[in-house]
Image 1 (cartoon, rainbow, N blue to C red):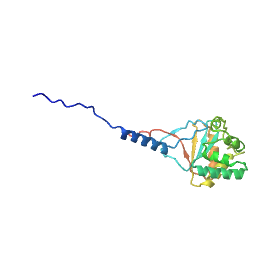
Image 2 (image 1 turned 135 degrees about the vertical axis):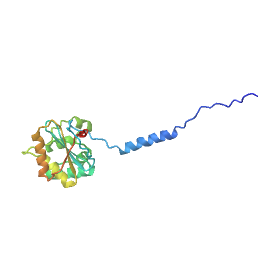
Image 3 (image 1 turned 30 degrees about the vertical axis):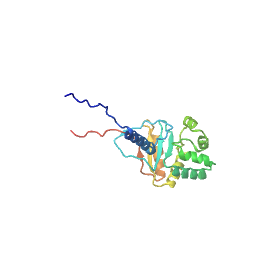
Image 4 (image 1 turned 180 degrees about the horizontal axis):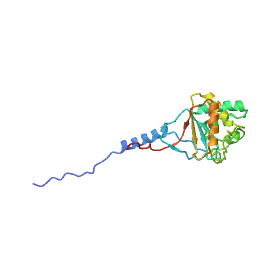
Length: 201
């Protein structure tokens, strides 16, 4: 009796669900990712074993290696309230467009007399603009106004200081004095995370 040959067919795999899943993941990450704003100065932070995360309602003071200070805070609405207060207090004469630009930009480090110039630049020009830092010395402590008005906007803001490990101690001490003057006795230092020392023998 002759053998019956069954027709051979190659296995078929439906890729439609996998493609759907891939697009769902891409959409999820696009909607939930928060991009980090470009910083005006590179900071080489010291290392520590602390791992507390600050991701919202914060004021960030960045201190460059030469002691230049940059100010930033999250929350677009809080930034808008802050620039309104500073414009009124310092008589900056900012337009609505300039205030809206400030509300969405990242860190800045210019004296008040250069703020209007910075806000009127195009985004690509703003990244190339030389920012020398916010004056924070005893004779002209503009940083004090930034911190004071920001704490009036939201007293619950957490303050974080991101300082270069090569910055001179006196520069950092001046920032700490400004914080204490504004009753900000607790603040966080941003560092690189390193492994905890092994104490087991």
